[in-house]
Image 1 (cartoon, rainbow, N blue to C red):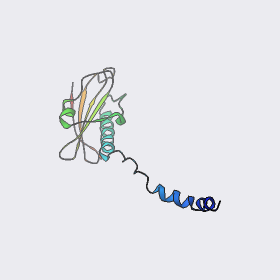
Image 2 (image 1 turned 30 degrees about the vertical axis):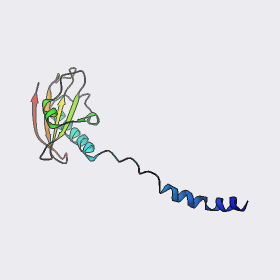
Image 3 (image 1 turned 90 degrees about the vertical axis):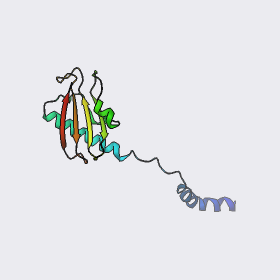
Image 4 (image 1 turned 60 degrees about the horizontal axis):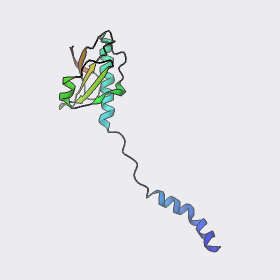
Amino acid sequence: MTRTIALIRWLPLLAALSSGCAPAPAPAAPAADEGATKAASAALTALSHRKFDVHGCAASEARVVPEAEARAGSPQGERCVILVARQSDQTWLVAVRSSLSSSSFGAQALVTVLPQAEGVGAIEYTR
């Protein structure tokens, strides 16, 4: 009985000590993904001001890809596609392909977004 009482008295201390030995939490998502989302959002905002139909496009659905893949773009489809790549000069290249149902009818825009997504450097349009 004495051992049980002693164990109960030490139980909170043992619990506190053992919680410090728990495995480390999973690392947060890389900062590049957050930066890519911000870059995609800046690109969509700039395109909407230039009458490029971004209806159905969501920055949160942007995919991070190598620069060559972003430059190549994506095929025309039923949904808006956003590809984001980090360039060697730390700017972002954002390829936005509008959906076939949009008023831009499958057009593609290549948007160069400044390093901290504080603005847009250039926009090129293709079909």
